[in-house]
Length: 581
Image 1 (cartoon, helix red, strand yellow):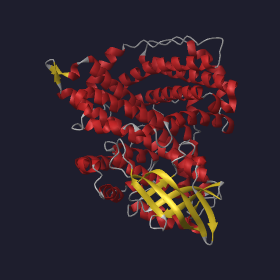
Image 2 (spheres, rainbow, N blue to C red; image 1 turned 90 degrees about the horizontal axis):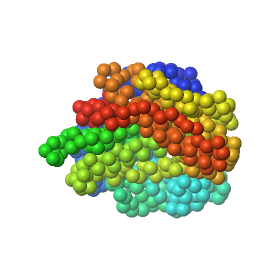
Image 3 (cartoon, rainbow, N blue to C red; image 1 turned 180 degrees about the horizontal axis):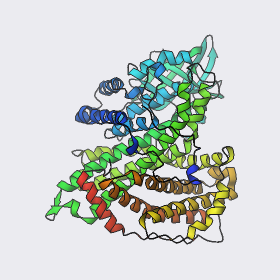
């Protein structure tokens, strides 16, 4: 299942090099085989999973494990496993499509993400050939399920403060400690466990469930995601044979961070799928619900909500698949390497870490779009949305926690800006030079032609983001993340609107007919909202840094937002949901 090959492009290049119209990968570029994979996932969730919602909500014993096995038979758990070990080794864009289509049932989708991503990727990225031969075929087929043990009662975002310890013993190691928030813990066969060897060296181990001393806590009583298993896992003098040490001693941070990088990309995919489903539910209800003698879909405020939901989903979708294709260019050369290649894990590290910034950006923006859609969906349902009789209530409950796990959204805002600093220092991106040359763009007059105006706004967003970054770097340098978190977060938020609008504008030439009109309407609404956010964030940064020259007077796009939103709502209502695809 091939995708168009790319020359490897460095992460964050979008800040210095404009994307050409039609040059980025979008869902319109999927081939027929990929679309069939997406349809298989969509059919599975709608015909085999959603009918079981009452049992899923009650966490029926064995049900989620059975659904996980079915996903194994469909090939979903094998998506990122190399073919040498029984996997499909699918492109990152195809993996994202599968996850997106499972989004209408978040608990099932999370089970897959924890199994096929968090559990499998550490082995793919850093496992020894013998470890891969032993475990990957079972995990890929769904015969076994895996789990990822990183967080602890006293360490969440500060993972390196963990207390789980490993000490050498004859033939291996003794492991002691407790992990929490472990997804799939109730039925996992294999745990990837992070601990400090000799109290200092951050190291990972593969621990089988049946090993003596592995004990599970009760299922956590969560607000949502009732169908997924979340438990504490305790390790009491657990013997881990030497051959089950994963990767290199003291270098498990590569395993944890790179697994989470790729996991955040897929979190954005699941957020897209859940958000689309929320829009679908809200649209159908708005068409059916009668008030004052007509459907509430006729009312302007309801239409505005539908249009805003669709607009942010369009931006998320455009960024997501663009990023997946760019990442894939770093993974493609690895496919031809033999399983015992001495530099295999180094190549994987490079590929998995290059787009860490964009993955962080997608994670925090995507999960907030998901929550926006769920929240507005409840609001459109009114009082009925606050009852469990309507499925939007479940979607709302389950759309809160993604902003917390796999790195809180606050941490991921900081991660993006820190990654930007690394790209400037290590990859040589001329961000400061570009900031100086593009500063004049900030106050340039906007054209009246729609496409020209959108392109001019992309340039304006880019210049504003670069100026904010330049001023912050000059003031704090490497210490920006620690000393001025609010400033670092504001830069990340500006980058979202830049990356989102540019991804949309580059996508528009690929849309035809009604999709083309809907796409342009969403581009206009996103550009208008982005212009206000960019101005506000730039002002925040400059004032926080004590800039004496004030905020540049950015021109305001002339867009009739009410008329545009009403026209876009017509497309949403006609499609009974997301108006593209």
